Amino acid sequence: MQLSKDFERFRDGLPRPLESYVLTTYGIDLTSVYGGLRVKNPFGKASGQLSLARHQVERDAASGLGFVVLKTVIAQDRRGEQTMREWAIPETRMLVEPICGRSGERGWTVTWKGRGWFDSFAAYLELFHQALTAAEDAAMQVAPSVKYHLPTPKENFWKEDEYTFTTQALLEVWKRHRGEQVMPLEKDFSPTLAGSERAAEQAKILEWLGTVPRLVHRAAPGQVHVGLKIFNALFEDEFQLRMLDAVEAAPPGEERADFLAYANRLFDPAKQFEGKVGVAYGGPDLSGRNLAGLERFLALESDGREPGRVRERLPVSATGDIHSGRIAAEYLVRGASSFQMHTIFQLPDSEFTMRAGNKTDKALHQILFHPQDGFLVWLLDLGERFGLKGAQNVAETAAWCRDQWDKIIEPLSQ
Ligand SMILES: Cc1cc2nc3c(=O)[nH]c(=O)nc-3n(C[C@H](O)[C@H](O)[C@H](O)COP(=O)(O)O)c2cc1C
Image (cartoon, rainbow, N blue to C red; front, side, top):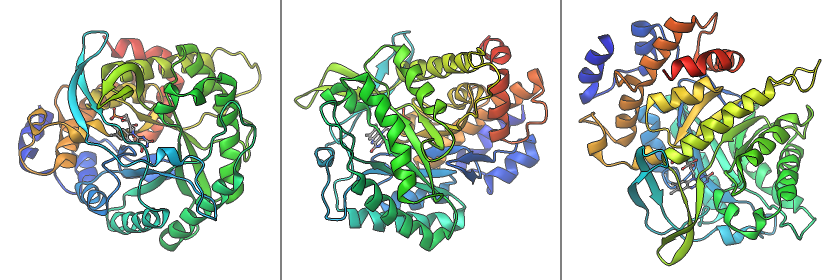
């Protein structure tokens, strides 16, 4: 009842500060964790075309996002050389269109031909500085995203200098704003890799996952929280599990990632767009595959295959078709403690109920307050049905769900 009223009432503007309103009205603490840092709420912008300019980050800070992951920059070494430079191509237009999932569910996808950051590395460092400045007063978190060198199946060397130079340069900017606080950083493995020869060998991919955290950590010991943005490979679902398992099984220390972003888009090798065959896509199939994968991973984690050893679980930041609070809650009950989105911010205004504000305001309004599909109604329901013993905020609720997943997922979907 209160939610329906609020949903209607806030069509002309969200209450500010959002988090204190939600806490006093609904008793829900939206605080969570992203990349080892406290976030005021778990909703963020995923890396991409909507986080490559200062004005975009400023708007997100003003609208109240918990965090923003900047567009992926292509790493370079100290001489300015980039082994992954083929990923730094100018972007094309983006096409936002409805898509129907295999289950018949309707959703949205964005198609385009771009890849990583196309401007200079110095310009990216400037963007990072501007983003951190914009985020300061709003207590929003900002993370860079990097595509470092990855050897092809035929190569067996690692361009460590790219890891060292790029990480240290980003850290220098970070430190000007955040001092000794640990810097979150996402490593983009990009779904388009799945269509190229680079993904041909599963063993190589597992080697990437095992090596990247070590190389980033070594560049700045103890100063970077490394997040691996896992991609949806063209292989069978089993391989998704092997990737997750490999990352989580890494021993504590420099070889271990600090968090996961799960999971980047699907790849359609047959779809054509502007003369290119094979493009990435999202929508219901993406959330379907990701949710099923995370659920299977929880089952694997708790099957007792390593008696006597309790594995420390890595925090998960979810990405993929989060277009409603319900989908965010689906990721939450599978253990994700933050939610990063891209497509929702490109939907036409007709998809939103809010009249005022920009897309970020509209998305937050829909995601939080929708009386049936909103995050708050799902959290209230979770609390009523299962008690959430002692879990206070979103990060604690995610941890609680991870322990209870087998008791809550099924009843919740009924
Ligand atoms: C146009 C576009 C550009 C993207 N660029 C990047 C990128 O540079 N780095 C990255 O890690 N992910 C990138 N992504 C993936 C998004 O960050 C996000 O993980 C993915 O789209 C799933 O979220 P969504 O379903 O809410 O769009 C891009 C996605 C789109 C649609």
